[in-house]
Image (tube, rainbow, N blue to C red; front, side, top):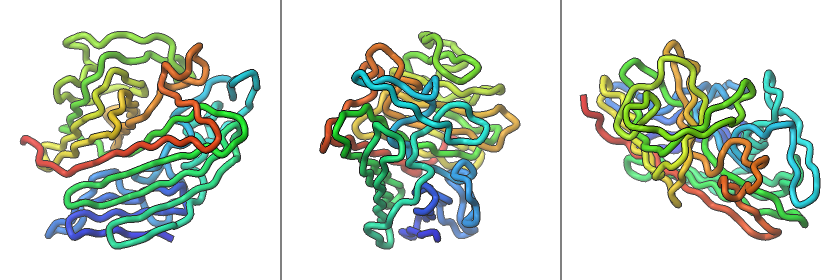
Amino acid sequence: MTITLDNGRLRLVVNPQLGGSVVRFDRLTDRGPEPLMRPGSDSEHDPNRLAMYPLVPWSNRIGGGGFSWRGQDYRLAANLPGELLPIHGDGWQRAWQVEEQGDTRLQLGLRSREQLPFDYRAELTYCLEDAALEVTLAVTHLGESSAPYGLGLHPWFPRSTDVRLEAPAGGVWEVDAEQLPTRWRRLEAGDPWSYSAAASLPAGRIDNLFTGWNGQALLSWPARGIALDVTTLPNLSRYLLFSPGEEADFFCFEPVSHDVDAHHFPDPMAHGLVELQRGQGLRQQWCFCLAEANR
């Protein structure tokens, strides 16, 4: 069952039972709804074929099928067909409960202890405000022992030949065959992966994490005359950029709180994870604001 939010300018369709995912996010026009994220179907059963889903209690992959934390080893099963490693936590694959529902605001809740040491309650709120979609994701740790948490969003956007991305970053992580980080390199002026000014997406595959971001980005589709201004609160300093290549009809711009496989760095907190004791929480907000693109 899907739930629709509508403020007369924007429309959001959410499937609480399918990871709290967004099915569609559209601008309403005289010609009908115009997708601002890659549109999915109400009958779809795979969140990776929808418009957006939450990342909790971590983002992206964890190497080796688990990690050690405060002297305890934890094993995490692979949770996506074709993936050898656990990915994106479990929030995107769980049924969320509807806690509050209105014409322009929806609050969902999730209680999970499926992937120890992550024993938590999460809240996910979608709100349409004039020309903007505000998304808030919060998590509270309920386990007796502490655990390292991270949050993120995984939106899917339409990819066209004219799409442009502006998202200044200081560097990018190169990856191995398992898409795990191997070497960080600085992004110098003129680097084809530099988005300090609006630029096209790479022609080839990209699935890499960028760091040193200021938490603000602009995604634009000049031929359509529209753009999305992306902001984060508090400001996030990392994002993932994913696309199979120029032949794909989508790309993903994922604002996240920590590095890929941060659980295996000597100091995970220096790479964005936050240690939560029982009763402590973490909260993040994202805003996708409709704007005009320079043609």
